[in-house]
Length: 151
Image (tube, rainbow, N blue to C red; front, side):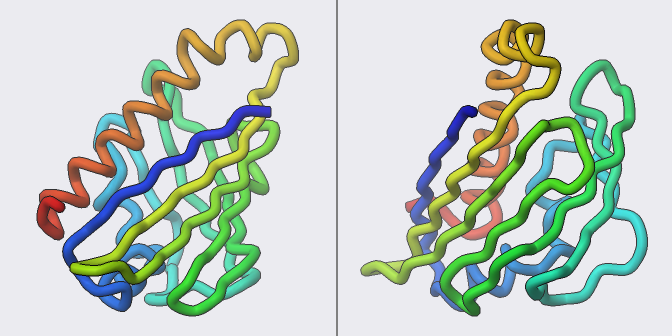
């Protein structure tokens, strides 16, 4: 099992951050276009526990994959958790935290994940999977700064 943790300060209120990042409709705005991300079906403005979100993503060689996540936990304004139900990972558990701090909000992401395919997956993790995830989180960081301002 692997883990990624990221923190980012944004000069906006916790409520503004929550309203943007907890809306499934905004996920495409913070995802690199190179991933071919597309949400399927209608999604509500706000998430709730038990919400399933279906989308297609093409993380490798442009090959489209179905991904279904479930919002498993929501504490309004504080945190939410999405977990993969169908998709490219053996396990995907992503926690999103929001904390008011002086001058803005501190957002924290914690992702626990496991790659599929046993030994082969473990071999490809540092070469393909981890660099791709690092690239996605860097894109999100930069996009968030562009949308909401730098610290």
